[in-house]
Amino acid sequence: MKKDAAKAGARVGLTSDEIIINGGRPLTGRVEVRGAKNLATKAMVAALLGKTPSVLRNVPNISDVRVVAGLLALHGVLITKSENQDEWRLDPSNVEMAHQADIDAHAGSSRIPILFCGPLLHRLGEAFIPDLGGCRIGDRPIDFHLDALREFGAVVEKLPSGISLTAPNGLHGANIELPYPSVGATEQVLLTSVLAKGQTELRNAAIEPEIIDLICILQKMGAIITVEPNRVIFIEGVDELRGYDHKAIFDRNEVASWAAAALATKGDVFVGGARQEEMMTFLNIFRKVGGDFEVHDDGMRFWHPGGELKPVTIETDVHPGFMTDWQQPLVVALTQAQGVSTIHETVYENRFGFTDALNKMGANIVVHPEGLAADDRRVKRREFEQAAVISGPTPLTGADIEVPDLRGGFSHLIAALTAEGQSKVTNIGIISRGYENFIEKLRLLGADFVYES
Image (spheres, helix red, strand yellow):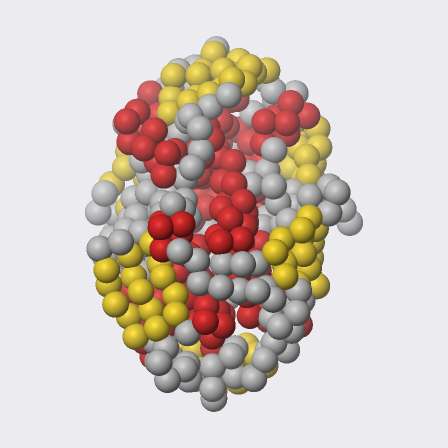
């Protein structure tokens, strides 16, 4: 476990920092969230499509953003930042093909390189994808991406060092139906189709708020995109696009994480920048468990109102369902609920590894690798799904634990904050992939800890 986690940390280019937490104290106070990791990084790639510079505001200070900035710089994009670092100007005037060795230096740092393909094929006629990394929570095959690119006219060649793509006859519109509403594959189609000749019809598309925000960006650039009912998107290719000026949507995953932390620690946390509309599915579950919240113009307040927490059954799904990224932080609060909760994980096939550490701390969580059948299932059972059954309440006690992945890592922080006694959480550098300044935010909320980098 320790060796695997350290390897994961190395692959995302982060250090194995550690934090020693004295738990059992409620988190109280206010934190701010900025732009979503899952939008900001894609918006940065979209800047490659413009003839003029783009301006992205509300940019989060996270390592995934820095990785994409490095990849853009390798391809000749000039990036300048505002004084407080949250407004970025991206100038693609001198886009060029990066050296394969330089791109490969980023291998394992992010899965973002595959989204460079469409824009680079339009700009340069060629693209290269190194080995893809990110959190090890499932196979995440790139077949959806490559199949779509072939439909647009790309020629794909698999090499020992990665994948080379060319477009000898340019890219043209295509009729594409995804076998699953994959967020990444939907982004790929959008970024590729907007400059392709003719019309593209995408069926079974993902419609997450971050996808809609990306569509808004592309429309600002001059794209013609129509979102139809039943997950259908039409894109009419245009001859050229200009730069954009856009404020990134807030990070829904970070908001849910701080809300879950407030609930598990019996705290009271105000999350500035959060909005209700994009959080409605999470808020319903949060209320069913026994948490409470208020909606304000500048954010949302989440707290534990006292009394027993209640068990729930959750099925993760694509938007507008319950996000897979939300279940991991919430599991810690469910260990304190009176009764048996069940989580059916239908998006990733390997996302319950983080529960080993929670069981070590005293939780009672049983993972069913093949999932569980039930008559009242809303989501059609998928072949590779898992299920976790959480029995509570179980008091948590401090332990030495190691972060396995981004969301599981934040869950470990919540567990350490909830537990009585001292915990040492190592390899926490992975958490900075998606959580901006989380160490400082823990200080603002009154957590008792020592951080060692």
